[in-house]
Image 1 (tube, rainbow, N blue to C red):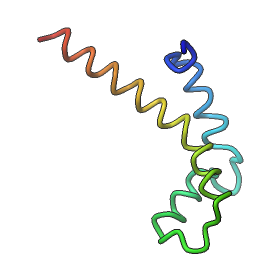
Image 2 (image 1 turned 90 degrees about the horizontal axis):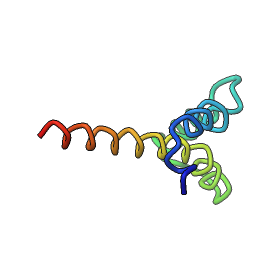
Image 3 (image 1 turned 30 degrees about the vertical axis):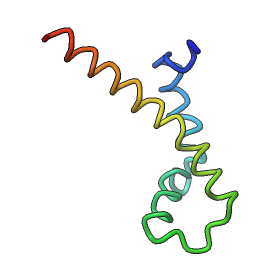
Image 4 (image 1 turned 120 degrees about the horizontal axis):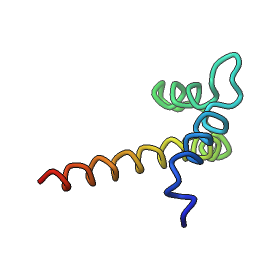
Length: 76
């Protein structure tokens, strides 16, 4: 479980898997725009693709939230 909490590994995953392929736009960005636009004609494979490319970002958000909570409780 140490890998889930290693912010350096998660950051590398965000910058590689989370954004790949990089051209013409990051893949995750295109999927998010598709969902915001109503997700018309999205297949199960597209949802899986969104999950795979979005997971590193969710893990990074989790780490940042845990660190922020930890920091707040240390001050109190």
